[in-house]
Image (cartoon, rainbow, N blue to C red):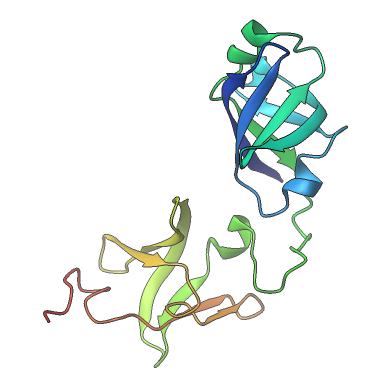
Length: 174
């Protein structure tokens, strides 16, 4: 199964390094030197990571065959894609891969059906579960422990404890 693990940003310096927007909880594994990643668009790859380092809080990578700033800048906005075994689980039992969550039935703590998780939106502040409602439309549910206290992969269920207004589209008035 292919999983997007990063997006290449702007070139950094003149020796072919690029900034990287990390999209994995395991960058030390997925973005390690020697890793060979496919790309989207495919014509930009595959790319083999030659080296990596953190500079001013940002991950910088250098790829084999990318010798200078011009070549690095040509890779801007390219997605880096890793091959992941679908049976592989994250080390932390409180973490999940997107493909594990998509298709789960979302229910409230009292068992009422909300819908089916159709996608995960990765936003800067937090992730959102996108849930297709049976009556049509979507519910956007912040994927945080206070609102989604339980994920049961064996049963195929995400338990949601929604704050007032989350599921009916209006916030509770103060």
